[in-house]
Image 1 (tube, rainbow, N blue to C red):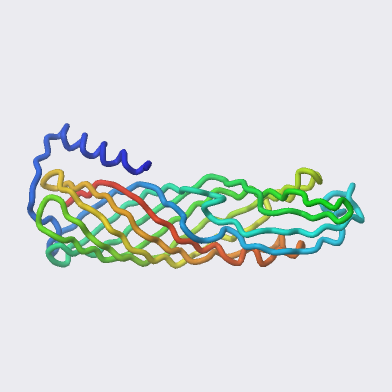
Image 2: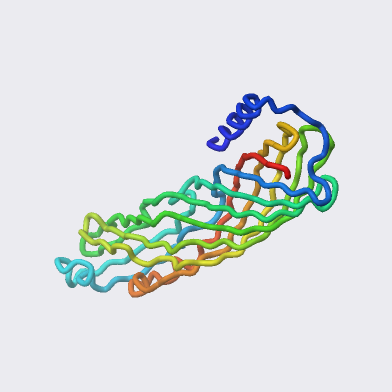
Length: 264
């Protein structure tokens, strides 16, 4: 996975600096640490848009050459995995030890995926007795999240497993979409689809912490992260009978991350 090079880089840095290993606890009451993390998010559930069937009595407003021709839009739901696939994230965290092997933390996270294009459905044209492809291209996904949580470590050696839970808020930039029916020379360009949105975030992590030296740990973790839905914008697609397709936007991701933790 793309997050794995962090392990290699961190190990190489430790070797170059000659940092000695240690088996003593780093997380203790009053201890402060900062962690830099990066990795990938793999979507496992959630749709960018839902499905709908909507009659269009006249295609003329979309293409004057088709005035008087009716159609039926048949849009299917499309998932985050289909449209965006793997997204990438970076983050920074501050943590405060509340007791041996336990800490509270606050984390900032940025998640991004590039523009995604997919066939979203078809337009059935009775006059031609055929269904024409409808394609959609969606703006890149950019999300900023602020999360707080609790982390519990286990053991006293250089290698420590841990579990963590977190809650927070995610701020997602607005998303526009372009819908095209190539065979009918119809395009709806840069249609507002989602407004800038604030969502609730909750999740948990399983991880390993390996002590590279007296004040540096190597971190690797995998988790589950749920983000609630986005605010739909129907100003361009509502007139086509498609107002219901952007009433969702919630998702469940599996984040895989690695990084370095610095103790002070």
